[in-house]
View: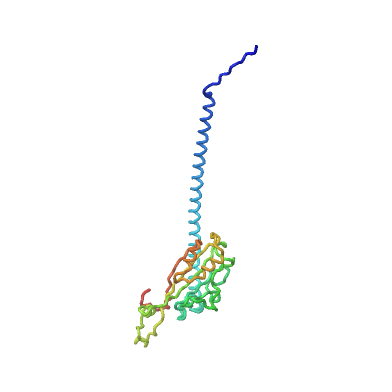
Length: 262
């Protein structure tokens, strides 16, 4: 006679199985927390890196601009002492025919002179490029136009403002001369000697940190300094890392004092 054995199943899981499931849930929860904390840490470190990089870029651009200004001023001072105003930046910008013009040149470390009339680009009053002065702009695709270990391009532009009728005469006058009177004063002084003012702009760019093609950056560097579409506005629109400094210069003849006092 065959007997059937009945097997009774427990209505609840064993305590060990229940504990294992709870531990698994806790472990998964901890892993999720670790992943969240790790993601936040990575994002924070990336942000810190971007801030550090931006600060380094600004310092590099500032140093390039400052070095260019110091170099051009020192070069012009030495040449002026040796040769007067012949073929110097101050003499060239102070010439009457430069009024309203913009003169640009690239800071090329391999050139013997920073400013040379053979390596400049000049715009007239109508922002037209002079055909015999058209090789001064920097070319981002040319390694010879880079400074600071081949990472930065620095271009300088000097603008001779057009004197207005109201202040042009006084700004150019010196002590011992008289407005609207070109006769020699009684003390034997000479006729009016011009005291000219011009503005210098220096712009440094790091093309490697931009996604734009070199031709687009080169096109920006050929923009004028005055008007609505300028060098700075063009580079800003392209999101190219750059920095511009401005400096005003006064060409005051030796031994005289400008009436304007500027």
